[in-house]
Amino acid sequence: MDKALTSPARRLPAVDAVMRSATIVRAVDQYGRSAAVGAVRRVLAAARAQSRAQGRALGRVQARTQGDVRGIDELAHGALSLLEREAQPQLRPVFNLTGTVLHTNLGRALIAEAAVAAAEAAMRNAVTLEFDLAGGRRGERDDAVRGLLCELTGAEDATVVNNNAAAVLIALNTLARGREVIVSRGELIEIGGAFRMPEIMSRAGALGPKTGLILKVHTSNYRIQGFTKSVAAGELAALARAHDVPLVNDLGSGTLVDLSGLGLAHEPTVAEAIAEGADLVTFSGDKLLGGPQTGFVVGRKELIARLNKNPLKRALRVDKIRLAALEATLRLYRDPDRLVENLPTMRLLARPKKEIETLAARLLPVVAEKVGGAFAVAVAQCASQIGSGALPLETIPSAGLAIRPRQARASGRTLAALAGAFRGLLVPVIGRLEENALLLDLRCLQDEAGFIANLAALDLEGTANGPA
Image 1 (spheres, one colour):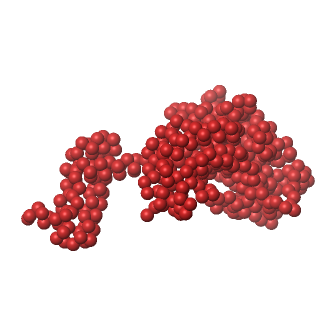
Image 2: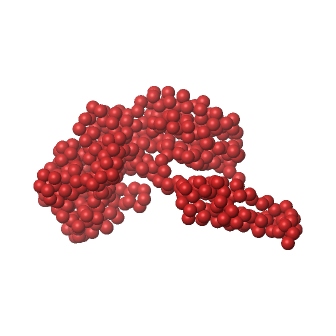
Image 3: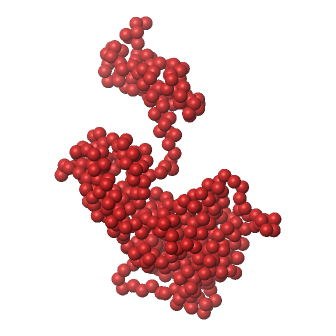
């Protein structure tokens, strides 16, 4: 048959021919032969589909004579690009420039270097997770942090589960299963991800004809304002004692230190809740505490013992990696004078606005050059948030960069495309859209050099007019 009349799809090289290319030979070494063969086949299939579509559009004879035939190198590089994209982990580092320090969708607290090192050691080695070295017999995994938690909170005892919702769940399930739980209507919190306090209470089997406990819930992600009153924990503690039922105080985010020392509004500390008479206090480890995702229950020894005997405890326990990171994080609180220096969450919350403004001024010309003439870049005043429900009405003065289209009539799609281009970088940059601008709040930017190097791949082609 005349080669000029051969279908373009049939003129594509065979899989074996592409596999012999130098590009794919290197790809096999890096990604494995099976993955490389699969990528080549998918690229060839896409090329054949494109050729057939082109043939239908151009007409049979014209397609046979003018079809675009892909070369081996082009196909090989296409397969390599596919392999590289698929090798990217789903859980990727990002630059959090949203202005929310403890961003739930971005993993909340950054872990201290001491905690990272402890977690790495636990991953690489066998550890005394449930082994008593002194007695040479089985131990309790909570022992790694029980003493620290009691020391830092003033509680008699403590136990650890995998998050604060689990802490509330096991407390209710243990102490009030099939019984009533008295809680203020204004404290029936609802958080993103379908977390509703009534639902947690119902799942725990806590609703019934008799009172099992009194529950006080810190209003985690909202405030009720106006003519309202919250009953003090001390009053509730007296009421609970009078009726011989426990008082459980759920602090939500929870903090071990007075945040007013960082210039923030006062948030109830765990030690204060214990001192006010709560029988049990529940709180999180991955929010204001600045550690890995965990949940704590601290308080009266006999109640903690009951929780630990609940079969749910085994299902809700934490692994050795998080436990190691948690112990290292708690040890940092023994040195409160250097907490801001050693704990990323505290360091970011305490970061001075002047320092952030200086950083913004340094980055302005770099970012302006990368986004080109279609966008204007200016230093902007920002209001950062703590996040994860802590102090929901409080903001922290900050600074950043506002990137705006120079065309006054630019569509919202233009800004959406701009934000998408920043998210498409090797290390995605996550900002927020506000007042017709992409706002990059720099409070949480710690790696300035890495951020600048990352911008080298920014591609805004076609962005000024929005996506097609």
